[in-house]
Image (cartoon, rainbow, N blue to C red):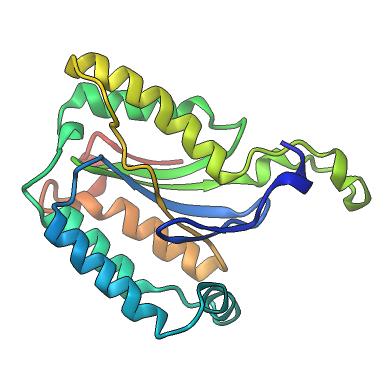
Length: 220
């Protein structure tokens, strides 16, 4: 996709700020993984986080201060980890391996796959998309650069895995929740914190004592 056609900011149910060539922390979850009452809590928390501001203004302030709506994400992730309801298809090793394979498929092409963790109903990944920008690239030639933005990358990951997973389940319909939570990494401190957060997810959930024991956690 040509750079001029890429929108670095867009809004769905969540705001998405996706600067070209950034490193991104992304969480995506199974369709139906959160019950309606928990989704209500999330929507309420998200609306409160806006504090009456327009979303574009909120995003600008978040970007300027380096602060995210962390309380919202912490609630979002804790609800995913604590719920026993909804879909937990990724608890099946065969399902988790499908996701694992697709994540590695684009490593070195569309992104540098830094780390990930595949839980029973959601996935955390950290990827660096700057690999798509040639080392000798000159800014004056930006219009000629072909680049796959994060939004497209996520479709390429979620699309095939949904097809393969539905075949295993002998079912049809939406496998993944359409929208993902994403945040671009601002600095080294945030990078280190996100890596630690991803790797320790199964430890925090009580599945293993160290992240290395969990078969679906990866660190390059």
